[in-house]
Image (cartoon, rainbow, N blue to C red; front, side, top):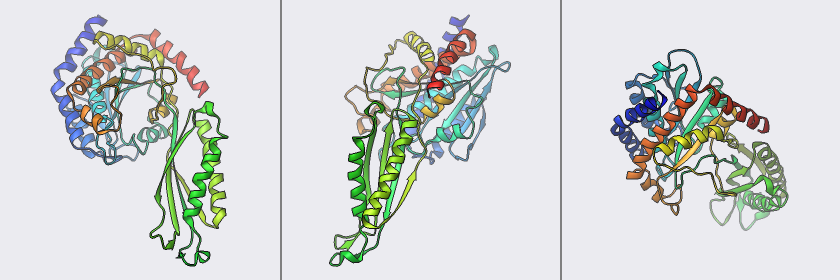
Length: 394
């Protein structure tokens, strides 16, 4: 029975291949950045509605977010498949989120054709602003994942990977307010840029005190540093990406940065303002779910691997979801390993023949994994045993 259903799920997704690839390519050719993904959301919603999904949009105060639901025969486990579709500012879909949106929609549609044979619900969350803004954080904070039992998604990459974690992350913006003066009379002014440069220097001192085991990382750019070289700058600003192994240690780093911001302002007598964006939590991949996905991808001829020890990882708002509910965020390759993410080469790869293949295979793998979860109570119990241990650590 199960084998027959999985085979039929594969066929259903294959039957809408043209629609899914078209969706991926349309999103790619019309890049929209954080919270502006109006067309991308519209195209996904239209396809989901055509296949009988009940769609609510906007949600959580985000015009480009949506929730699409397809119910089974009775109440039961609720499995969420997450779509991302924002582009990078100035770089288009150089992260391949067009592939994510299409595979998420495809997985849900393929699975929906068999929901009359199982208890539970399939939910698609259209999550905007992953690159900046943290759409999924807003969803978590507003309770959208409270009644979700399992969450999953697949991201394009240069390797086939399951079980990859992620660092906690936040954008830390700072501005110093001084007083302008003629450069011939600097004593009449308050040099905001001097305070900003002091802040950068103090960060280098902090690096020596931050615990290396927490993998602290910080990188910043000056976004404003003055208007002319013969005017003492009255305004200077910078933006930093701050990362750590855990959200709790990231909060320690933030307090340290606030402290040296005040000290750097005091050097010149400037005033200082700090602005934090939403905090991206560290990621806790559910390995039990990952193994199920791995087994299903083997059916499709794809070998999934675990990350190399010590491999560098980034950050994503799926981390916040992974603390709320058992989650996987797996990877399928669309480009060779020497291609760097967020590059023009990766952008081209996101509409390649391999990327189109990954749209379908990822959809099929997700759908089969969701079917395993919906139909296997022992698997669900094992997933939750692991999750409860993870949340305790988090």
